[in-house]
Length: 139
Length: 105
Image (tube, rainbow over all chains, first blue to last red; front, side, top):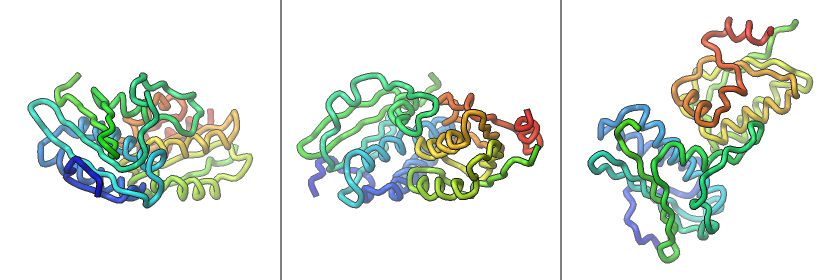
């Protein structure tokens, strides 16, 4: 397995398994006593990010997605890793735009950017690492 | 005016994993020419952008004068609708009676 990071959970890169990542996050948030509204925003960001990895990165059943959820002080960090192809250059560098009201897709990036405070992407060897950070205090 | 079509969604998670099946389900329920749908989302505890996209596709299929009233939207559904600003595209109602009234208008 080529992962350099050591995720707390790994799941197959399938849309159904994204639910397991969500369940893991929810348990971590419950254990940490995180407010429901904050936990929901984290869940939305996580699910959209993981869906993107499955739908636009790894093909069905082609690999794994790793996740770590770490609380430190007033910040939570979600680190996603996968062994799919690199993300398109600049994908996370530009502000996400809202699509047309009647668009049936294309809202994932916008939702992610609204639900967390920072999104960082890097390539480590043959692994994609996506780091989502959110302050736990009200904005 | 005839009664709107009532669709009670029984997926606890309306996400990318079930979106294709859900789209087939509602496509079978809402035939061509239908203009009013009452969507009960009481059972939905989480919805992602793919699930939301299916609702948008339903509205588009109903044509320019189509209207969808949503009841039973919980915090997760409301949050997604607000984040995406699609709370203006669907009529959010507090009860089925309110939704039926809204669909009459």
